[in-house]
Amino acid sequence: MADGTMTRSFTIRFKGADRPVTCDESQKVLIAMEQAFPDSRLQPVRVGCRQGGCGACRVKVTKGDYTTAKMSRAHVTEAEQAQGYALACRIYPQSDMEIESAFLGPRRAPKGQN
Amino acid sequence: MSQEGLLRPGIAQIRVLDMDEAITHYVERIGLDMVGKGEDGRVYLKGYDEFHHHSVVLREADTAGIDFFAFKADSQQSVDAFRKRIEAYGLEVDDVPAGEQPGTGARIGFTVPSGHRIELFAHMDLSDQAPDTRNPYIWKSEPRGMRAQRMDHCLLYGPNIDKVEEFFTQVLDFHLPERVDLPDGTLAIWMTVSNKAHDIAFVNHPEPGKLHHLAFFLENWNDIGHAADLMSRYDISRDVGPTRHGITRGQTIYFFDPSGNRNEVFAGGYTAYKDHPVRVWDHNNVGRGIFYYERQLNDAFLSVVT
Ligand code: FES
Ligand SMILES: [Fe+2]
Image (cartoon, rainbow over all chains, first blue to last red; front, side, top):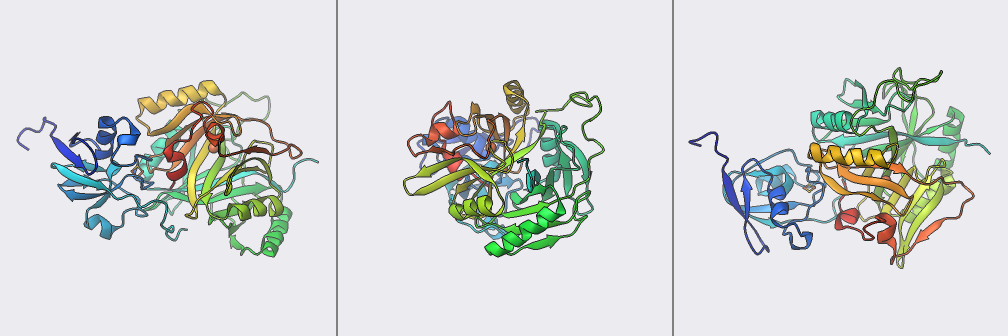
């Protein structure tokens, strides 16, 4: 980036949404989506914990670059992450992006614990 | 008859994705005291008004959720007697040796039909940060953050809720102050081993072993407001509230820790005696039962768990 003090912002297109969402590179994609669609009935991605634990915001990124913070492996395995699956509350855009919901519902058996 | 057998919730062990973020949340924001850190990295916490060594254990892992919830018994003889009854009911019981957690005696563990691990233990050392008992002040030093007095209860999600009710009431001697019965079966049960409105609750859910929330007790509605002030100041992810539950009548906020585990701050709640009748809610009124002011469930209540 030429100017280190400028915040870059990008256009995120969600499948099923009637308009694109603007998201800063320092902003989580899910939070930008919530701000753009305050009415939860119109949100193209589900909102849950906003903290990478519950899987409500699981998405598939079909286009664009992003960085990822820690996500629960119960919802996105390493292999799935490599295929573009992510939790929208844990990703920051690095380019314009195209995203679709990939919510799995309460289906997965928990991983072995203890 | 005075209370005997199991006394109260004793330990909740919670998985977190990032320990440093979790410590900031549970210690600085919720206001638990840090008791210590084990060699395996687990972190031990207690509320300022709790007498014993710890009540919350954080374990760093790559998934969020709950490892186990433990109840403290009045004696080892009670634990031994429960073991026989649990095995006779048909659940497998395993042993956790004394010292597996600091200051904590031997524990027994078993998996209930909802897929959750429950443990029982008789001994835990008193904390050297315990509240005073001779001519006490209300606290030794002023409480921090949301001023959580104690770990209070949890709500767990999993299948086979009828079996869970049978096991807790018939084998572990809990009683059941409140329930939600839908036309196709029981949705949720609130159970207590004391005379708090609930010590543990379950909601019927297809996926086993899930955590809906872990709750911390605050003194009053004013402290619930103060907790909400802190949530805005520190950008804590809030789910619902401040509001009230019709069920238990507790005043509440649901919010999330930095790993997505739901927490609750809870104040009030009625007193539940064993000889009181069960309060029953039906599908037309369950919204008011869960969120008394909104009078409707939000989507997240039934689907967002860790
Ligand atoms: S909202 Fe829970 S994982 Fe993103
Ligand atoms: Fe609760």
